[in-house]
Length: 133
Image (tube, rainbow, N blue to C red; front, side, top):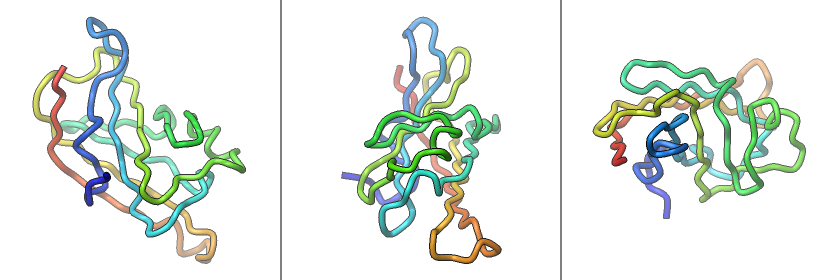
């Protein structure tokens, strides 16, 4: 079951070999009240302890598979269903240190039925999250 908050506490972890992590992951819940086509997602910004990570390098894992941002934009089949978390994989040599981190996510989504000049819709969330290992 997903938590109410945009940034989920479960799934915040380093990725790659334990002795040489290549990045970290966080799970996010869609803030939109229904499912969303993946090509309507714009580049997110992830900030951890003041270090900002660009959306170009962030990989998305959705129920349909894993995508770079460019692959999301060109997809015609992938969706981010309501009730399913997306996993964002952020490259960072060495991953993150064990312990508590301040995490902020800025998520931008376009809606197919809203005029272009009123888009994107922007959600920003911050919370503390813990890297265990």
